[in-house]
Amino acid sequence: MEHKKTIKKQNQHKINNEIQELKNIIPLVLESSEILKKLGAESIAEFEFQINEKSGFVKASLSAEAYGFEKEYSRLLVLEKLINTRLLKTDLTSANELKSNVINKIEAKHIEYFTDSELETRKILNNIIESYNKLTLEERKQIGYGRQYDLVYSPFSKYVN
Image (cartoon, rainbow, N blue to C red; front, top):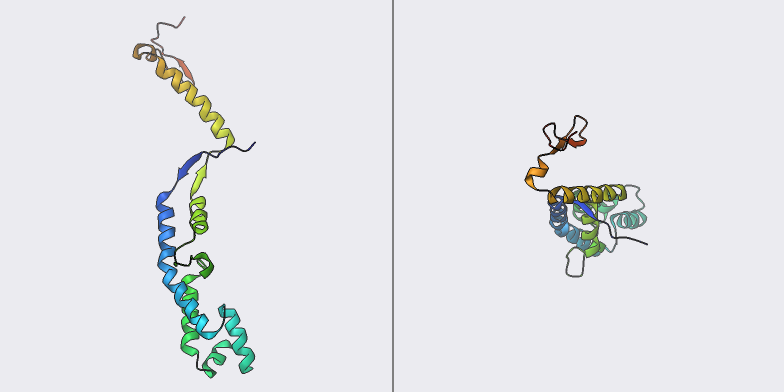
């Protein structure tokens, strides 16, 4: 039987920051995609392979320069460094927005859940707190914490032997 996880902490600030960072690099991904489309390749590696095959050179920058694609190739390299594999064209919808699965992964990364033992301890503590809160103020004054943080009668309690 699978039970629903209980959220312990959700760092909304980190979630918002990471989503905003990805939104900021969407134009870079689109620009990279357009350049690659213009060059007739799906990725930089594919373009490098194709142009090296055509030219017979080993170095892609020389091949790009030989065929007049040096500006496009250098811009692709700059964009690749800026994007740093954080976002791919496949992570975007047709409207160039982040797909929901990308956002869900980010949220999942910044959510911490209670473990089973923590949930059990929490249940016990909630019962203790509920019982304590049922006592009157005068009754609450009869108990306190000992040196080892154990619950004990107050030294001034009228219920002590």
